[in-house]
Length: 537
Image 1: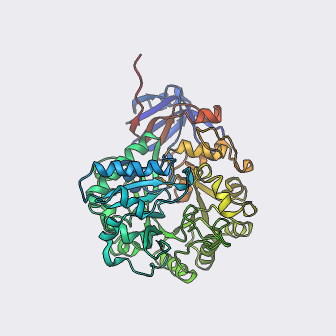
Image 2: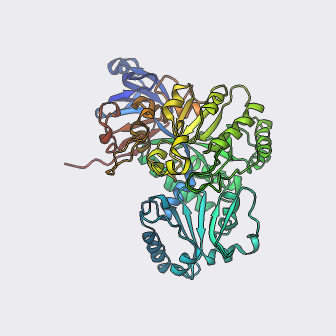
Image 3: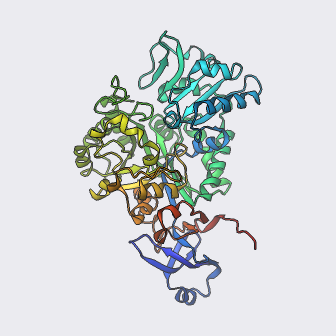
């Protein structure tokens, strides 16, 4: 028995402006589509229910192609600093949180961004000690590539902090040589985060549950997420996903990237690429090639314009990177590589050109923000997808120009150029770095300006996408990134019955009206997992 979805503006996303009157589904599959009256006649003995879309827009289920689901759940659980534009507000919020906590309880806050502060001077250990003398405190930067810890937190880390920072990591010091509490990149940050208590499977499951509920409310039917390294290893975190999504019937299609340090454990436990359950699939091997622009750790081919003493951080040497790619190929895995700086991107291309993926598999290059023409020409010849985050444009501009230099910006954040060169692109948020709301990502892609605020500056207007191109990033683009373009990303016969129903037609409203659009219904595998409350008259 099945369901008829009718009386809506149903866009298939097969081509621009292609619409149908109705869709008929059975279980988790689309059986047929077309004229409503015809479908009623053809399936009269099988239609069990009819869903009235009330004239609203229905599209294939929106999918975030790059985020951190557990990390996003943590953001919802923890002190959130991301909206604060004043460093004193951050200090006051931390002080208030500590005053309400028992002595010795860890306080973890998320999302500080000095580029949005009136005074961009970093908050370091001495200041944190003044507001929190009795509680270990960790403040994670919005990029999650840097954190600041107070003395209580350093004491918990104990002797694990050596004079020489671990390879690929940075440990900050005051001019007198004392630790200043600043740790950059995962090898260094783990010296602190490994000591946070209470990060067990129950904690991870709580974070996943919160994140899924919020994703549903934003119209998301799926995510590509990377979490299987930071919460007690592969098996514990993977089991948390299984428990919440599969066993507790919280359907969200989750493609799980596997950190390169967890791949051996995955294989040892008998799992392979694309193994999983109904909604969960193990995906590509995740590698970090560099850091973040905000922390001056993204690897550039030239010194930073605002910090000429550095060109960033290579998490791995070229030889180490090539060895990791060979490891992925030995397990028949594609790779998904965090590459923000152009030198990191070049290093990854060097490795892929030597060891391309097996036929039928595709590598993904995540972020691809700082680009050069020669790198783009090389990438066009490889089976790669650019996994882009449109929301980085309103977040990073204009300060990113001061970091890389205007003269080096011709191919940066160049989404339109990428598509014009035949590069397949998928769209994500990198939540909790940016808002998980895909409609904000779509707004950023079509406007290239900040939402809601008074700043109407359009950054590189020639790189704006059409509405169809922007929506495609989160539908057909995300499906292509995981090699599932034959059963996901479109409303077509035989495809999965995942739909996002929106309160307005994105193809007929203004850019500013886009910011007011909400998800009305979210459908995963034919199940309505979210429905917006309707106000009674």
